[in-house]
Length: 193
Image 1 (cartoon, rainbow, N blue to C red):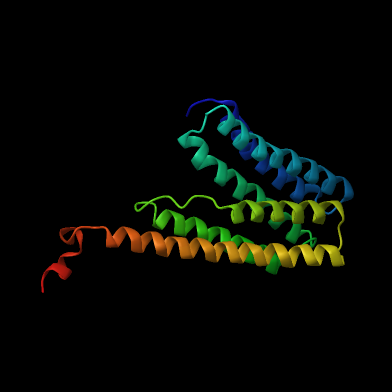
Image 2 (cartoon, rainbow, N blue to C red):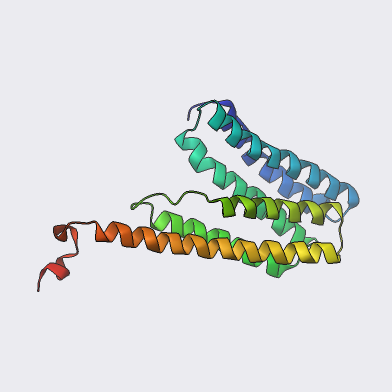
């Protein structure tokens, strides 16, 4: 791994994940625990903004950063969502749908990796911002308020829509690559006619 400041920030975000989980387990159902979790989550989320901006600005984009950054993001959000649901600050159905989408998109991206990379979209960035807002709101203002309910519905809806968008892109990538293969590159059973 190349040690750059953006990569160091990504590693810090990964290291914050177990601490965030521990706060939820030990004191997540208290006011002090929620504020500690909020501070950790916001600080870690800011490293996500900073590492990408710095990597592009300083031309320090690395393979490690491209791999570790989304893993750190998903681990941070998943830990926060599970902690919030375990402490009854967020409904389990919202957590389950968001985590299922993240798992499905990750599996999909890995499945078509041999054909090409499906880059992060603007919709995905909006999805991350919506999820971050939802988590911050649930920690800062505990209780199922009308505002939180609306934010949860919009966030889950947008999360599902962007997941479907990745599915469409994966199908398009598969079709474009398979149509550009020479006939001899196809399966043997197709050649025996």
